Length: 272
Image (tube, rainbow, N blue to C red; front, side):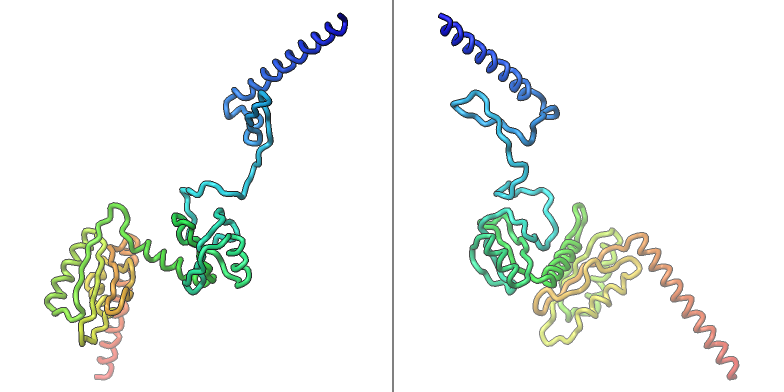
């Protein structure tokens, strides 16, 4: 009888203990995220053999993670932080090396003293390229120039295309059109095609056009060859600050010319 009573008391104590534990941990689980004592280091793990089990989660993990990063970094070396296991690697000469594990790609990077650059993360597998520091710098300059040349949202960009053998009257007409667009603060993209048997320097032709609208315009994108026989540039309206600087420079230039003319007149008078 005594043994039976002892067993009953032990069972009752065990049930009470479990009940208190459930109440205590249940209170923690129902707290708001701001008041959660164990977050982010504790989590609930379901186990059919136990009512509630708590385990310590890993606060930082280098395994696969979500790759959708709203703030994409600028073009450059990714160092050794590569979230993908399998990569498609391109060497510094632009040749494909095929798919490989990231450890192998990092080994190649170290062996040849190169840097890994992410080209396309939306491909399967993502595409990385081994590049030198100079190659990365040149690519950054190209991308910056392309971004600068692309019209901003809400900005109107007009385009004109003509041959390097354009007649003088036609060029004057186009120049007047350019001046009107610049006055409206539009961007103007000019494309000149090298005419057959023409020796015209297209870059000088761009400068000649700019000279006619120099009081208002400047280069947004300087003249460059886009493909064989075709060159392009983009003109834009100068800012107020640039206009003031230009007017000041022109005033100083005119003042210098006037002084030189006065000196020449005095010199001629003395010799007479």
